[in-house]
Structures are given as structure tokens and as C-alpha cells.
Image (cartoon, rainbow, N blue to C red; front, side, top):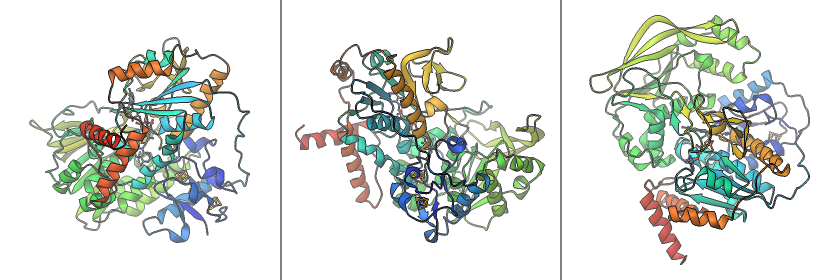
Length: 564
Ligand SMILES: Cc1cc2nc3c(=O)[nH]c(=O)nc-3n(C[C@H](O)[C@H](O)[C@H](O)COP(=O)(O)OP(=O)(O)OC[C@H]3O[C@@H](n4cnc5c(N)ncnc54)[C@H](O)[C@@H]3O)c2cc1C
Ligand code: SF4
Ligand code: SF4
């Protein structure tokens, strides 16, 4: 019997070091790691020791004889990886930790508190010495794990448990409600630290740049995601769910998350998710029966990952519709599958779509996957009434890449609700060089640079989505953060970083004068506990606090109880 990695895998690679036979791949030092949709266990090599199960923060590893019917596709998905990347039986090759240097003087500020920020803080904490201050603009930590990851993916959200270990660290401080650029400037942070690491994520979105995009009824998926997850910046939005069809432009995982939330049974969302109360109420009154997901290119280029599609196909009462003519293996698809660079996940994706192609089984709701279609304009008198799409065909270019070309044919999809899900985009932090074209902080391997001269800005680093752009799972940020911390420590030991000009106490005083309501890790544990207790009393995993006033009240009464 072997073990199998399933849906919740977030690529954090915690399982790899404990595997005695090195049969979990790709490892962070293997080329496919940064683009893999999940990790895989080789069923032929696994010796069934179970060591990896304990290490997995999201309970993604399951014994193959305990796979549920819904999890069955993962058996094939795991095995497939090793057909393209055969297991070579090589023993694990872990980097041995270098000699322990004296890092006790090193002071680092980390901006943001999403996965990349916490992975960077944990890497620094492992070095035992560096003093780390983390600054987060919201009153709650964990970035997109709290406000992006879908509310019905509770096991994925459990990844934050490993970050809680920093609560006990004497050299780590979490500052919540402190926005860099508002309560403290980049220059002030840099003057008080050897290094500043920007891990601010990608909070904005890309536009479609088509006519009608700003009509009422046309929204960014980022707004809907923030709204259903209770993000304070997005709770004011309203979405008209009175029509029967919604259209989502783009077919990445965010698009599929939005589709799943729109089509899920609200009673399931009540018991198995921490969806915001206002969203749950709106979804209970929703009349949406069909969601059409529109992708510019073909099935082999689809942006979603297999686990996301498997989750959708497991929704009760929802037919997932693939048009057989759009997902067949034509010459272009065959060209992609024959390419030795093509990952096994693409092969699986094509096969899975072909196996599910058809007109559905008459369930009450439908997800319609449309390929080879680009939005041209959104029509409507005063609000969205339809989306016009151009139909495409695929061509193999001279360099072997595949591109979409309009055939000249068009189609119109009637709908009152359109979401664009064509990519997240970073937002500039005042004083920090920004690459407008890519929507990321200008950097070379995480060292922030002046985009004109390409010279490194001493002591300034970046990691996560604001460094690489909006791609990769939660755990992908771990390797990214580890690499940046390695560079930072190298620079510190090479004595190329400026020493702090004054004490942390001075900086704390300055920040307190501008933001008297700063919260810390202990305050967050109070909020966390209160949210869970509120959820428990209503049969839910948690009920999120939405507005800052309530959060501050809960924290104050918690502090008063302890007479702080
Ligand atoms: C809708 C959605 C669903 C996803 N689902 C999954 C999933 O199921 N599984 C999975 O593995 N991955 C998932 N991901 C990917 C995962 O969330 C990202 O890989 C990860 O969150 C990126 O981490 P980050 O730290 O770079 O950015 P973020 O998580 O965005 O964190 C950035 C933090 O910086 C803070 N910040 C921004 N500006 C400032 C400032 N000026 N001062 C102080 N703080 C600031 C923000 O408030 C935020 O808390 C999903 C992503 C999205 C968008
Ligand atoms: S069960 Fe043991 S051998 Fe199998 S993948 Fe996990 S750690 Fe490796
Ligand atoms: S979440 Fe991490 S520990 Fe769990 S299977 Fe995926 S990579 Fe391994």
C-alpha cells in the first residue's frame, strides 16, 4: 500500500525531509517545483511508513486504501507524475546547515503577514538570533490564506497553524493594523533595521480593457473573493444574484473558486466554511443556476489546476459541462502533449475533461467550461445584459508555442453578472521601486533594485507574490522566502548592510503616535478564539469579524479581563 497526496496540498514541502526513501516530488531543488500544482508520492517507491502524514499541515496525505470516491482521481494524478519524472532511487540530498554565525545583532522588518512573510520570519527564527518585527496593515494576519483561499477549503487554511509557533518566539513581534506607507514610511523602517523585506502580496487585479467593463453588474473576481471572505476592503460591495447565469472571464483557480461558491449549496457553506455572514445570506437568496467560465485558449492551456476541477466535479447537484469538440485531442493538443517539457498534470487535465465531456446529467445547476473564446465587449443599457465573445482557434507558432487567433466568428452570452478573473496585480508601496509592467516590486532574485540603474537597494528585499507575480500555491512561497532570507543573511555577514540608526523603542513610539490601536500576536489569538467560539455556537468553523470596530472592542475587553 502507498500513500497519496490529495486536494489540500499547498506545496510547502514539509513532508519531503521525513520521507526515508525520497519518493515525494518535485522537491524544492527540482526544476518543476516552482510551477507544480501539487506534490506527488511515487506509489512504486513508497514504503508505507506514514511519516509524511504527521508532517502535513493540511492533512493532504491519505493511505490509498482510505481514499474516498471523491479522492480516487488523486491516485492516478500522483502516479502520473512519475511517468514523466521517473523515480531514480537517489537518497535525499538536503542542504546541510552551514556553520552557525552570530546573527544576534541582525534586525529585520517584514512588511505583510501572508504566507511569504511568515515563511521568511520562520526562516529567520530558525537562525536563532535575528530580531524580527512584522508589520501588517489589517487587524488580522495571514493575508490571502484568510481573505483569498476559499472559505470551504478549511483544511488548506489550517496551514497557518505552523505560523502560530512564532507566537512563542522572544525575537519576533507581530504588529497588526500598521500600514507601511501610512503609519510608518519605508525610509523610517530602513533607518531602524538592517533590512526590510516586502511581502505585501498582490491585492489589485488586471482589467480586460474592453467596452462595457465598468457597467454595473461587471466586477473583478478579487472583489467577490474579498467580499465572501469578509475582507474589510470589500465588504461594502453588492452583487446582483437575481439572474440565473453568471459569466466568469478567465479559467484559473480563482475563477473556479468563484464558480464553486456561486454554485455551492448555501447550507453546505454554512456548516463547512467560514464564509462571511453577509455573503452567506446573499447566496441563500441567489437564483444563479449556471456559471459559464470562458478561457481564451484550449484545454491544454487552461489555467486551473486539477485539484480545483476535481473539487468542482464533486459538487452535488452540479453538472460540469465540457463541449467534446473543444476538448478533443486535435493536432495542437497532441503537439502540446508530445512536448517533453509538458507536465503530466496537463495530460491528466485533457483526459479528465474528455472523460467528463457531454451535456450533463440534468442536475439542477451547471458549470459550463468554454474554451477558445475571448471577451470582446459587455453589452447593456445602464447595466450588464450580455457578453460578446470572439471565437478563437489555436496555432502552433514557429518557436513551438501555442497562440490563439480570432476566427472572425462571434457569440453572445446573455447574463446580468460578469466577473473578470484575468490575474491579480501588485500595488506599489510608497518609496519602494515598482515594475509597472509586471506589477511587482523591481527585484533581482528578491534583492530590490533601482529599475533604471539596476543597482541593488542596500537592505531592501522582497518575497512572495509581490516579488514573483501572482502565481504559486501557499507553500511555493516557502522556497521563495527561504531563498531571500539566505541572500539577506549573506549580505549581512558580508557587512554590506547599514546598521540601524536608532532603537526599536524609538520606532515603536513613532508608530504608536500615528496608530494608537496597534494589535499584537496575543491580541490576534484573542480574536481567533472569539471567532471560533462564535462559530462553534452556531455549528460553523468560525464566524469572522468583519469590521475594525468590533475587532478592537473584542481585543479591549480581552485585555481588560487580564487587566493589561
Ligand atoms: C482567491 C485565491 C485563492 C487561493 N487559494 C489557494 C489554495 O486553495 N491553496 C493554495 O495553496 N494557495 C491558494 N492561493 C494562493 C496563495 O493565497 C498565495 O500563494 C499566497 O497567499 C501569497 O502570499 P503572499 O504572502 O505573497 O501574499 P498575501 O497572502 O497577499 O499577503 C500579503 C499581506 O501583505 C499585507 N500588506 C499589503 N500592503 C501592506 C502595507 N503597505 N503595509 C503592511 N501590510 C501590507 C496584506 O494586507 C496581506 O495581509 C489562492 C490565492 C487566491 C488569490
Ligand atoms: S509513507 Fe513514508 S515512504 Fe511513503 S511517502 Fe510518506 S514518508 Fe515516504
Ligand atoms: S501540504 Fe506540504 S506536507 Fe502536505 S502533502 Fe503538500 S507538500 Fe507535503
